[in-house]
Structure formats: C-alpha cells, structure tokens
Image (cartoon, rainbow, N blue to C red; front, side, top):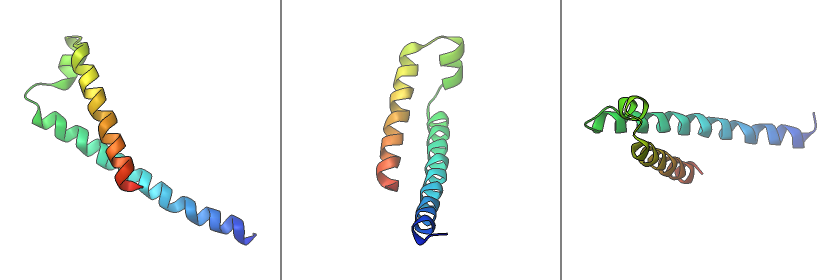
Length: 73
C-alpha cells in the first residue's frame, strides 16, 4: 500500500477513539442530570407531555455536546 493511504488510516484511529470517549462522557452527563433533578425526566416528557422540559433538556444536551466537541478537539 502506498504510504499516503497508511498515513490516512492511522489518522482515523484517534478520531474513532475520541468519538467513543465523547459518546461515553455524553451518556454519563445525561445520567448525572437524571440523578440530580428531583423529578423523572422520562415521566415528565413522555407521560405528562411537558414540551418545555423537552426543549430545556434538548438545549442542555446540545450544550454538553458542544463542550465535549471543543474539549476533545
């Protein structure tokens, strides 16, 4: 194989590792938010149809993703 292809392959490996680290940290942050809040996020959004909470939680998830992307970059 040409050396350029081998170099490109070795550059993909850190990207995959960073993806999995970010994915794990993202999941941990959601679990922490679920434990900290005094109510069940799932019940409020699914059963009670609380749209405002869905928007707030979604915004928090996007903010966490942006922070993780900046840190892992």
